Length: 199
Image (cartoon, rainbow, N blue to C red; front, side):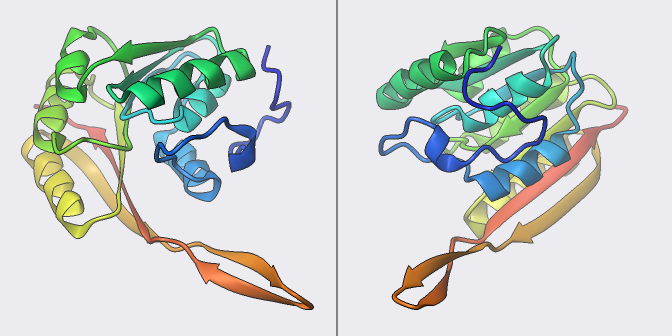
């Protein structure tokens, strides 16, 4: 049973997570990502570049009869993943240490993949996912740079993915400045989603 989130909706506030200097998928983007992943209660999700674990934990709370694998190689991130896993009490979340392109090869079965950080290994990761993901499985990728977006799109097309969708999301947050509220723009995030088609 989770200890810190009692709702059935996505978008856990960022401040609920234990954070360091590790990148994290922010709550508004995360809420969209969870929608695009279309998780079921028995889904098996792989989170590549798990960071603080915000997507992994939300996934584990939804797929309570399934499993979430969080892949991460950064030492600080691995410590944060353990702390956040314990804080939210998600037993169906397994942390895997290593590079995304290497660790994902060791997994035999999954039906959902999120790539939040590829570490420059987008091509190799998408190729492996293209081999293993069953027909109808879903992949969702977030990128900040145009180059990563272009690579993701190219590799999805090469590896039998269909229904490819790209959106760019810009979020502005209100900040109090005395008696007024100023809207501050955050980085625009590209979100790519696709289904696995027939090879």
